[in-house]
Length: 115
Length: 116
Image 1 (cartoon, rainbow over the protein chains, first blue to last red):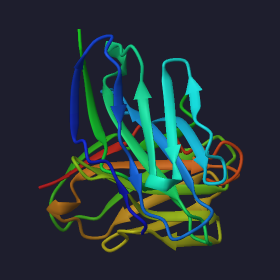
Image 2: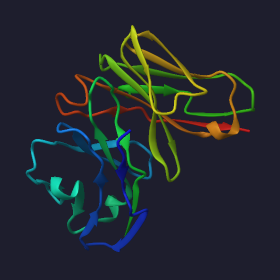
Image 3: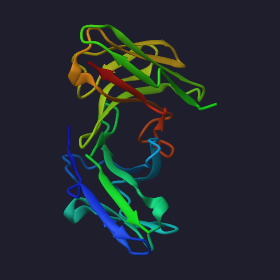
């Protein structure tokens, strides 16, 4: 499997601070897909975004933004003006197709937003 | 009711016992998956199914088997459970697949399995 690395095991910030979660991926393919999922303390997995390898535009959704850089094989996730409800484990994942299926997940970053 | 339902939600069993985790979906999706989550390791793919007749091994299939009884049902079995299979197990569905549509995986709420 082509790996996804989330080097930050745990991040703790105070509410209203901006925070960036790092994701570095391996690839041998020209076509691939990158994802972010959120797992709040309640345990469910929530889809946040998918980005295709041929679309390197950054994405913004409210307080969330994603920076996709092929040059550094990174797909970082920034939360602006963090809130306590953002506390969760965040997973980066990739999919390379080629007949196989299923996402390869990183180990996750536990984000703690302190009031 | 949830679109993807897993039963049981919690199970404690003993080493050597056979265990089945069941997944049922009402989304009408062809693709179904079983993942395992361990603390600090993320989620790892056990098996996936493109449709009823097409089942494939994932990254960590050893010690597990699956059955796709119908489009809506995908069961995971541990023939002889061992303690290192203690984990949180997730079922998921997608349609038309990870490269199509939004690419979203729809997860069940998880089944927590403890093997003593």
